[in-house]
Image 1 (tube, rainbow, N blue to C red):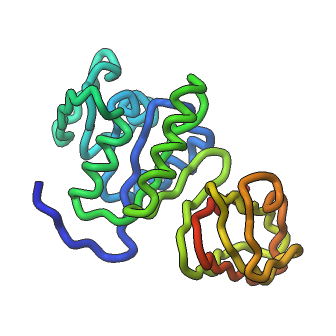
Image 2 (image 1 turned 180 degrees about the vertical axis):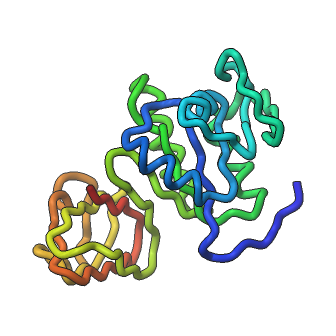
Length: 210
């Protein structure tokens, strides 16, 4: 598959088969996403939301029945049993030239699927910028700086991936200065003071907001 160039603002949306959480937020993202990719069973969510995916990727064993009339959708069959449909959809997004993807439907449903989806995102986050959409948003961040647009009083949390992340944080009720953040509760329940600035010196973490 040929790789195409895209603007930094471009992003794709991947729908998985778990619970969607905030359905209105997912539908709003779908309107802006280029492309909308369903990982097999995620096509059921597309059908329920009245959306036509650009691509459906996977082994096609969990498609909605009857299948909606989607004249423009491309079905990309991949029967590799060594990889799950989410991994296949991420590969597909990467090969399309995407560097940023939102993922909805990763949680809820079967616990083993949810844990596997989180593990896949942690493993693939170094090559793709991944944001998880549920009842709130979680961005997987690596080394670098960002200034999330949180209004004053907005609750947010930092969750380090193993083994640890070294972070500095300002503009928050609980600031950090080159703090070694371990996986656990230390980064939960912070609050924006108006202008949050975050720097990840090393490691990776989830930045989560309600």
